[in-house]
Image (cartoon, rainbow, N blue to C red; front, top):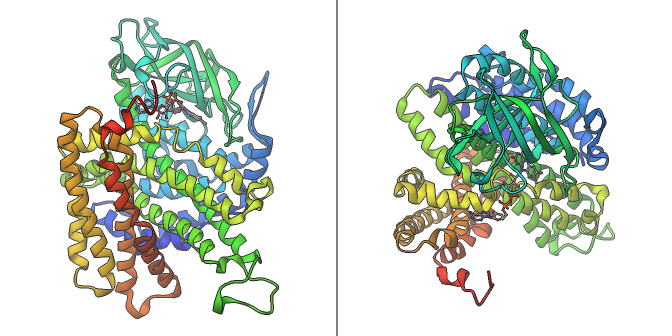
Length: 591
Ligand SMILES: Cc1cc2nc3c(=O)[nH]c(=O)nc-3n(C[C@H](O)[C@H](O)[C@H](O)COP(=O)(O)OP(=O)(O)OC[C@H]3O[C@@H](n4cnc5c(N)ncnc54)[C@H](O)[C@@H]3O)c2cc1C
């Protein structure tokens, strides 16, 4: 499957709708449009020409393990060397660790294109950025110096080691042990499963971030600490030394992401270095997990983009049946399926999800820059509020959409989509993990409703509703935008009422959150996508006569979203209110 970086769409989102450079500049972060575009084009080039061609073959060949270790598919190593030589891993890392110091939103653009080009390959780089950030935020200076420059440059990669055979969602059950050695370091022992990039042949060292329990730690999540455990110990001169008791005991055989090494790792008295404080490991790891959850949303966007491109290209070529009325071409034996209303429904649905998600995710990535660097404290606090509130939506809503978009791509291709040659079945297989890892989407929904909304009495959600209300007030005088204003105002009121009901309901009924959470998250996801499409529509309408055919297409997509997709929210509101007894009725399913 070929991949064409959607530069025009990315620029529309970044520059025309979100005005990224100005937003950053007003917060004291200087970067101009040309610099952003330069990164976009450079990264797009290596993604399209070097990394994307390895996607299909890497899926067929997969990873393999022998006595020497784990081997990535042919070409992955060379592509990685070129990626590192181009300085791409370090674009948004801190300058004093050898990074480029560019805003994190720029890093998100690169992640999106990597995921579009080759999701398996992308995973070798994406977790490293999270490990970099986690160590940077939590570790002491000595540890930072030992690991960060090599992680920033891409010379080493990183992993996150949470999951164990008996513990996935419930990390309080984990049993990996960390015993002090008496010299400040710890001996780590235990088995972790499903570890992405746990072993491979791309770099000469791997930094594992491992959650483990010290000997007298309390039970549950409060007793968990975080350790940096290199695959090879670091010598006094900072180079990889002898092996460190980290063994890859197996590779998981899985549905998709065949080029990504998902490993069973056994830690056998491996030397580990405490990151942050003892028993505060989960909080430290959340720096990485929150970034990884937003990153999963971005990866989902990337996967959906490629599937959408394949469906669109196929629908233009495939001649089948007669198109309705005026689209009919008598010179052809049949018309392209792109002219069939139902095929258009599928294509437009894909494009509305991809375009709307792109706006949402770029905007949320921008908040990570504002939170980190804005000169104004109020801006930093608001960005932090928005990120904590909406990261679960970015992860869950967009990953569910990626599965939907990939599945629609298969539907557009018909039988050809189910056949492996055309690549969209790979997209669907690769996308299917996104709603599962980095905390399942059910868990994200619970996090949103229980912790982020009910947990603060609806304060952060109220802020979001207020932002949208200010927007609808602003567009109220523009007749062309009336459908957007009406739809958003109605939803704002519905969500406001629902918040009050759910906050009160959760106090009276412990099943309320579990009953309503997934529908609530979907509702908020739709609301956000509607808000961003409305902003896109405003951008186009404001252009007036200067609007091009490209802009008119964006406006048409915005209308499609509001008319054809947003009405789903009426059902979601009802479902979020449904009785808790219906789900828990033992007559329906016995426990
Ligand atoms: C390809 C792949 C790569 C991965 N990479 C990594 C990695 O790099 N590092 C790592 O540590 N892990 C990794 N994982 C593990 C992944 O994060 C877990 O699979 C995921 O967190 C879910 O845990 P679980 O599989 O144990 O499912 P379980 O926790 O057993 O959950 C099973 C089902 O029960 C539901 N459930 C469980 N508890 C609750 C609850 N309290 N409320 C509502 N529903 C609940 C879940 O939503 C899910 O539907 C990877 C997994 C895969 C398949």
